[in-house]
Image 1 (cartoon, helix red, strand yellow):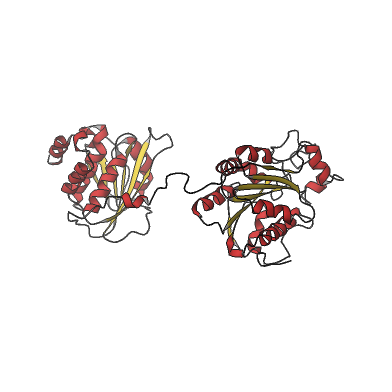
Image 2 (spheres, helix red, strand yellow):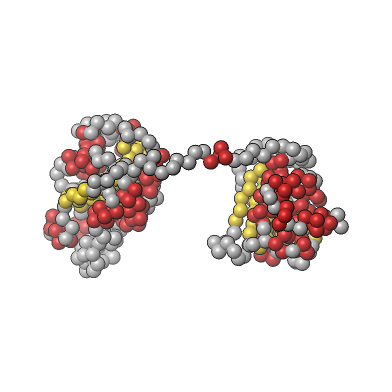
Length: 422
C-alpha cells in the first residue's frame, strides 16, 4: 500500500482491531482523491484510535475527550483553502461526549469529514458502556447487556443538516466508501461499525458484527442532504478588532523606578474592575507598560472582585503575580479573598480601609477611610489615594483618564478631590 500519508503499515493497535482497517482505508480514500500528506489536517480524539497520530505524515492535532470535532470546526473556520482537507477521528465515547459539537458542525455544513470509530464501548478505559452501545450488547458496566438503546449518530447528523452521512461495516476494503465521504463538499460523517477484540469479543462470544448491527436496528446505509456548504462569505466578516482600538498616547510623566505589581480588591458591584482599568489606562498615559487581570466568582454580582495589575517601564512578557508589591483593599470581601497573600508579604505596602482588621503582614500598612466616599466609589478613590501616596503616576493622569472614559459626570469628583487633600 502507498504509505505516503501513512508512515508505516504496522499500526499500534490490538490484533484484530477495526481501528487498523479504518486508518488504512481512510488514507487509501484520501490518496484516491489525490491528497498529499500536507493537504490533510488530521484531528484525533482521546481513545485508542488517537494513537494513530505518530504514524501520519499529515498535520495532526490531538484533542481532549469529545472535543476533536470542535477543534476540526475551528480549523475549518480559519481555513479558506479548498485544496486542504480536515479529517476528524473520534470514538463512540467521544462522539457522545461531544455530541453537540457534531450537531453544530453538521448544522453549519462545515467542510470537514468526521470518522466515528464505533466499537460500541469505551475500549481504552476498560470496556464500559458508551452512548452508542446497542441495546443488549454486553460491556464491563452492563454485564447482562445494555438495557438502553444507543443514539443513532447517523440519523442525528443527517437531521442536523450534514451533506453526507453513511454507516458502514468495518470489514474488507472500505476505501471507496471512505472516498465518497472524504470527497463530499460540506459536512460528512461516516460511522464505521466494529467490535473491540479486547472487550467486545470476550464479553459477547459468538456474536458476529453483522448480527450485532442488524439487532440494533441501525442498518448500514447513506443519507444525503442537498445543501449549500458553509462559506466564509455567508456572514458579515469582521476585520481585525485591534484596528478599532484607540491608541493611548503618552501625555504625562511617571516616576516608577522599577516594575511593580498591584492587587486591588473589594466587593462585587463596587467598581473594582473599572478602577483597575482607569489605573491601567492612566499608567499607559504616563508611558508605562501594563497588564491587567480580573477575577470574581461565577455569580459575578456577589462576593469579592479582585484585579491584578503589573506596571513597568519595560515590556511585560508574563502577567503572573505571586506575592504582590502593593495590595489595596476596600471591603471585607476583598480582604477575605486576599488575606493569605497579604500575610505572605515581607515588604511593600498594604492600603486598607480603616473599617477592616489588619491581618498579620510584613508590609507597610496605610489605613484610610475609602468607603467614606461611598461604597460604589471606594475602589476609584483608593487608586487615586494609591497614586497620591506612591507617586508612581500622577493623580492628574487618573482624573484625565476618568474624563476621557466619560465617567466624570457619574462620580463625585469634587468630593474625591477634597478627600485627597484632607
